[in-house]
Length: 437
Image (tube, rainbow, N blue to C red; front, side, top):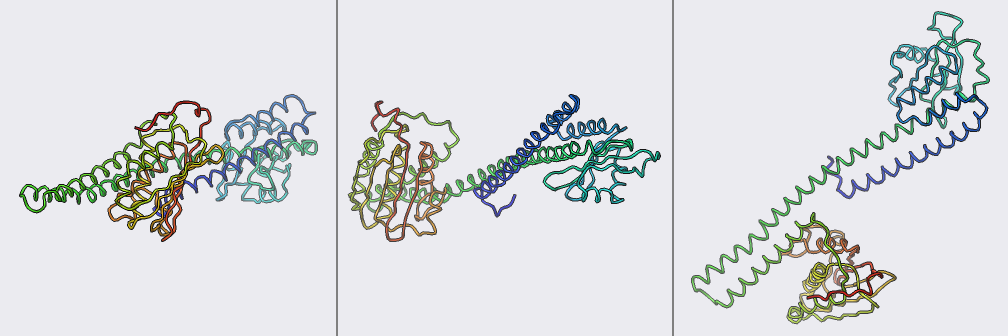
């Protein structure tokens, strides 16, 4: 498994390759349909048996069945004793059906007859130098399409009096049709095989990604929980010994406990990802935003953060989960506070564009370096000295679970803007929405 490719790059390459295969198959199917129409016009006069045999070519479901039907058709049309199909693969190997004619096909190749037939490009009635009776011949019908020749249908023990001129056009179409059908079938088989291999690779990558995530979580737990646990132990020992300012020790103890609680909450949310989807109900996003702001009022006052809320949307009702969205807004507002250590302005605007509700959260903080903006939604990525790197990743997952999107724009020294978009559900606008507790 190539370590140079990321999961996203692999998915993009898979999609590009599958699109190419789909286009290839579509072109081949169009050519098959074109040939089917031509054959219908060209072979309207022949007997019912001939039309039936050509229809059976079109209905063949496997390459083996197609080759067998092609041999039977040519054998009957040429009054031959037997027939076979040979093909030369792109790497030069000889493939013969049925295989008992391999020696005869190899002799045709070695004597240059096939090279001549490929250049000639039309059905040919030739003396069979490998047949003891001199009055018998072989009939070779080139396979291929669009100027490509990669084999032939060969009928053996053909009467030299065969009226080739009257069959020339029909044989040419049959050779082209069989070539196109073979190419189409093998392309489909290749596409199925590649799709299976890609699915297998996806499973392996997902397993590796899961193991990597577990490793990161383990490392995070050791690192992030280790420090506050050590601090808790130290403060507990100081309190037990009665040393120092007990009130200050208790305050710091509470601070470390809150850090642990917040981190464990984020880890719990991360590990809940595979659970069944949450049931949604009509909710008012504006109410959730206001409630989150109310909860953070003490911190806003302490950090000298001014809040400006604009509600311009005629409705902010969507289908969703109030508790999950409140977690999103709390996370975004706390990030804004961290970005404004000297105080500043948090501007929140709710407005609608068509059937989309947009929530814009802009701070006047220090901003994020341009080269890091693309990584902010990756799990475990953080620019904070004590951050877990899970907050924005969980926000993105919750927003997408609600059918929405979240984007972030930032410039160093010019603040950060996070934009959330949710689909407005017009069919639930008249329903009552539960209020945030």
